[in-house]
Image 1 (cartoon, rainbow, N blue to C red):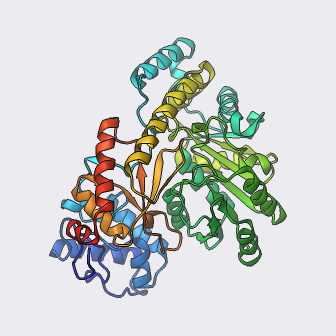
Image 2: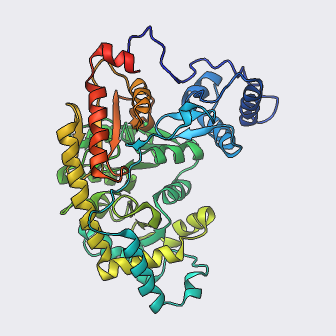
Image 3: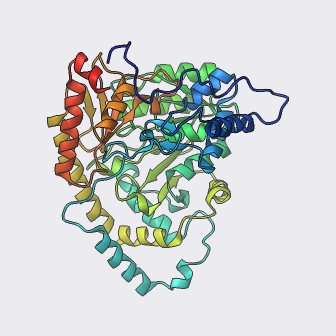
Length: 467
């Protein structure tokens, strides 16, 4: 697209629906909310209009990012706006809020060929109910997890950890609550958390909600640079480091063992707490040692089953530092979620101990590898991926930028995630993340990848007509 041609549903760079805020007129977030309500009522904002990013609006209004985050959150709760993954916040009812027919934006494991999840669930629950009182499964289970559940977790984590004390494991209903709980106990508003320049949006959202400052550490082909991390530790006095060393989201980079040892050495020298988010290592036959296994007194390790088995299991395992009381994290989780669903946790434990989880994992691995093969064959130059991963990090040619490509893809019925969604400082690369698991049928996935490849490879003039 040429610069002179207007893009459809671009963010409002200078929104006319809101003026300067009055710091003497009550909470600032309620003033933003009131301006939204008024603009919708007067038709200044219409169905399909896309709002500025939270960061852009915060800069325009000269307020904290958390103020805008709170206003947008309440606006979503009231139905004033819709959040569309990878494209931002829209006024409901317009074409901007439609769901793509072929979703390449949602990162999840693919359906396993030759296995029925429904049958596995049915058999697992039947077996579970034959051995466990249903009343127990429907009761409150408060604490870090039962002894059998924590023991099963160590069995699942063993490929990256080796032998592990079950008392170091806390069961969480997914990674996102665990991240929010961890950050709430480790840091206070204004504290600095270090991360890669592009990182998991859920982490960024949790930091914004808690008023934490995220600073990016540059990297190279092997991941985060140890020297840059050491400089940041010296200059910024961070509270923690957040890192995904295995098949990073979105960049797909995996730290080799030597780099993990270098990062661990820096963390140890500065007594830096490490939060290792590891959703993907079980997709690899022989994963590198977990970073947390090199830092038993400093690191937390988060391992969700959402990316390697199924999101609906809502189960994650958190390995805490060796000398820490598990009740510290369990108490923070209790304040957020009360407890994991006992039925799901019990099913996960049953699947792990009977080998069903490993069997399902094998089928998902095979399907993920087949889909990566499709991506390698169909996507244009600039695609980076791990052969066992669930996504591709696609760099764009010069005539595209990610915002325009997202809109052009949407009009083809395709949903992908722009680099902006992952950027720590707002200066994102021209790239998109392509998820390979949400399209159920492999043939349909091939169609989607071919269509997206054609769009990306289009000449500059053709791209302009698409976007």
